[in-house]
Length: 613
Image (tube, rainbow, N blue to C red; front, side, top):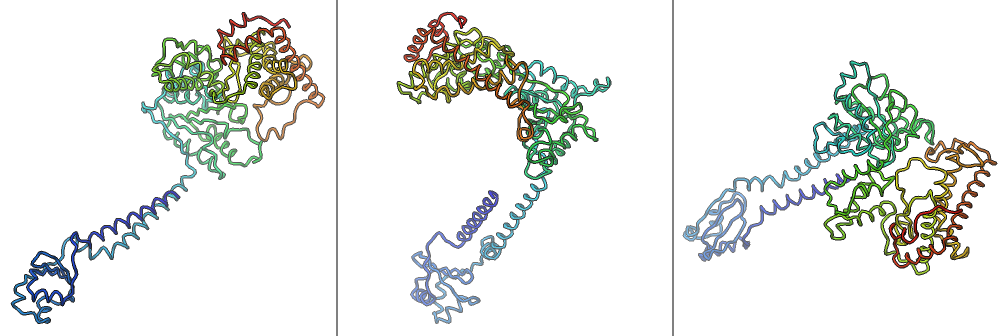
């Protein structure tokens, strides 16, 4: 549609230019008076005419005073014959200089031919552009099934990524080094009778660097790199996705050795046989073609397929069998040392103050992925510019950590005195319970300033990376989650309970349910799981699967979840009641300063001690 509009305006512009040319040919710079033949004859008789210039049927008359006039005569009649017919004295005729000028050159041809050929030329141009438009539509229609894969050619140093540009993920890089070695020196493997895996599946949470690793493999091997997203294969028309898969692998085979990278593989690689579309929808046809291309009758030598997904649990089993994606590389969230290396990469080109330590930032960001860390330093740089500073200081780093975790600060969200007091007691309850329980993470900051959707927040962070969690940690976390609710109930009573603890209650309920149904930590129900993991469910499987426990067991699960929540609330209430003085001190400090950092908090609360409950 946009092309048609553009062509239409092009035609209008062409007509406008032609009109300008034609009008320019007919318009003279000097204004000329047109006179009749009788008036011209009278002026000749009176001796006023100096020269007559004949231009075809037009007469240009120049008077003695230099004034110009125009007149028209009949075609084929000479000026002398015309004047004789009017009875002009021959002596008067000889006094007038008659100049006959024949029009020639481009002006003559333009004036003669342009009125005739201009419409024809416009029609020809119109037909030409319409034909080009139709040909473009036809070519796009014929190329509908072609893969629009983007390719990074070898030797492209501008966009080249190597393993030096990827910090952390040491184990993943070691696995992928074998792929690089095969692409560089395939003969060594062939002589040994070894076959390199045809497919490498990168699995990990979002932001851990799966796409960056695939680019690094292509950069290290210096081979053509074709990359597409899984969603780019799927179209409304059945068969288009499969056609694009065939075209993608055809291009890769022509450039072999090469790497094909499919991002977000789960968009087309989900388990077949489930869902509303049955087994004949477009996504499954695309998946079938991928399976055939990777390990079918036709050999696929020299092409290595690398795919990335956040959901390996929903992939079709045929994708994961040997011969296809038979090598699976897990890309975990970075640990402390990895986070420090990643920060060094993203800190390049950013001026930091003397108080900034990348090691300290890494210690304050457990659970952050590479993308989170990059966003953290970028937010700190933006905040530094907004404050008209020349170096990024520790203050901007700490504020950026909170922004990434909780969202932007909302100082414009002004609370009333009553709401401010409720928020202060709520956050003080969380912080006091966390400080009193041995398995709870240390409190880093307490604030009653709104961030994101939270009216206030208590920021807790572990002192070290944790991959396993104990039942004691979960029970303490439950008590901390209900600490704000318990503080509000104790201070303001049941009738004054607000909607503030709603997110805490939701988090505590889900945690208690996970303790019972996922982690097998319930004394009543024992070490087993109940139902399907929420992460493994998607449309179709939920409709076909039934839960694997009875109604009586469901009642026991509800009762056990309720018991855990009640015990956690009682623990939080006992801590708050026994340390009411500390609670009041913390609230007074929050009402005045609104934010309490870790150092000040520990001075007010004293050394961390175990609960006596």
